[in-house]
Amino acid sequence: MRDAVRTAAAIALFAAAGCSGSFSDRVRESVRQSVATGAAPQVRVENVAGAVRVTAWSKPMVDVEATKYGYDAQELHRIAIAVNRDGNAVSIVTSYSGDVHSGGVRYRIDVPEGAALTIRNIAGLVDISGVTGNLDVETQAGAITVDAGRVADGRSIDLSATTGAVTLSISPASSARVEAQSTVGDFATEIPGIARVRENIVGARGGGTIGSGSALIRLSTTTGGIALRER
Image (cartoon, helix red, strand yellow):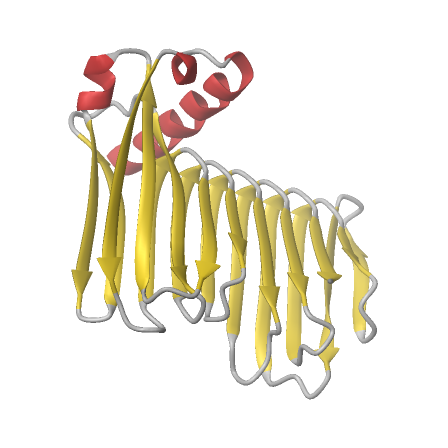
């Protein structure tokens, strides 16, 4: 019950800040940390409120630039950012002291191209570009935008939003099975072999096979549109 209340409070806080620009324009504090890794680390990000942007690069390390923002210095003090490595796994976690979530954190993260990502963001957009490993992304309030390149050879892409649009761009050389579902929203794609069906007037689903279907793509949102594109 307490977790549900905290989640609802975080979503409401983020929505209010996004509309008014209130606490995000007050005080900020930047934190930067780099962690050496192999070429294909497992990277997990857990955030409460704020955008998460991840970009691939050629270096064998994870570089984290985090900007804490809030109404005043006391709010910033309540926000903690932990970056830890365990073997070839890196975790990046936002936590708050006390029962009330105030303020937020915006992340800009560079990871090795072959990284596998797991991202959980309660309120805020997630944007990923150039990463070639498995992707497991979930946000409760915010859009998800991913440029995944070639999706094939057993790769797994799972993108899920509760309230927010989901957009995935893939290479024409991809080979994957596709499953897409929007409860309130549409599904759009021009990729051959992927069908769209309207459901219950307000929703839509889609699916099919690209190439030999050697990878799996799952796209879902409760309220919001879904787009699958070739780039």
